[in-house]
Amino acid sequence: MSEVLSQHEIDALLSAISSGDMEVDEIRSQEEERRVKVYDFKRALRFSKDQLRSLTRIHEQFARMLTTYFSAQLRTYVQFTVNTVEQLPYDEFIHSIPNMTMLNLVHLHPLDGRIIFEVNPNIAYAMLDRMLGGPGLGMNKIENLTEIETRIMTQLFRKAFSQYGSAWDSIAEIDAEYAELEVNPQFLQLVSPNETVILVSLYVTVGEVSGTLNICLPFVTLEPIISKLSSHFWMQQEKRRTVEEHQTEQMEAQLMGSIVDLKAVLGQTELSFGELLHLEVGDCLALQARTTDPVELYVDDRKMFKARPGLNGKHLALQVLDRIEEE
Image (cartoon, rainbow, N blue to C red; front, side):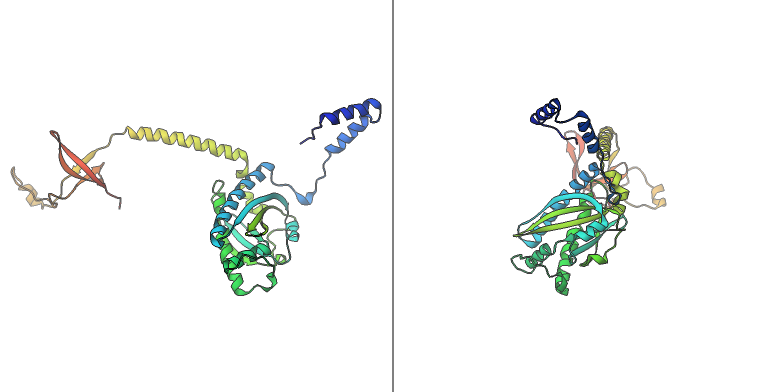
């Protein structure tokens, strides 16, 4: 976006030109310099601003889900908010996090590869302290994690990050499967160092302790669904949804006017072929039903309701008692 000058700056610029303090050619050269932008090929921008906005909306939804989940689990004030969403090389992300931290690896089926949920150790221990009945004090002793502490935090994060796929429901059907917990980023090599990744930073507050939770999404993992992150896709989806709703209303209107056959079966019995041949006028057949049993109603040869026979004025009638569930 070009810079907008105030009226005072415009007056000062015109005054400088008229007094000779600044030449027009000098202004033009400065304007040309401003048009040139430095491009770093190591920081290839593979996501548009529109796609970044869509990712922000998705993770705002996920932040609300995490707030609800951890508030119920820790029984204290917990708040997750989206801080930044940016794209950068994977190598830069790895070098920006502490040497010993909480790295949770998650598979996104049916997408390829894994993503990283990096939880600040201070936040992780505040959660652990609350789980063990403490006030929720934060500390950093990742190097000395006991087996019990590792198990508790793994179970806590497994249930939290398995909800990640639900935040993508409006874009694609994604199933998040928790893989493992790692503490040393040097052992992680998900993609090549120069590969572009999306880094979503969430600001986290647990009681009196605050910190960050970073989500690393490699480009190669999101590549199959990148086209769905644009506003054009959202508009197409909305248009398609409107057309489908209109078609559904038309079908319902047509179905409401359809004629169906309705018949009531008082009862049934079995006869041999010989007995059938010897039937005469006045013979009585015993049905396999009592007079108090409800009558079965069939809609186009499909058993649908139970009813009680009776009279409505001078006409025979049936009172519907119950719907017969399909076996």
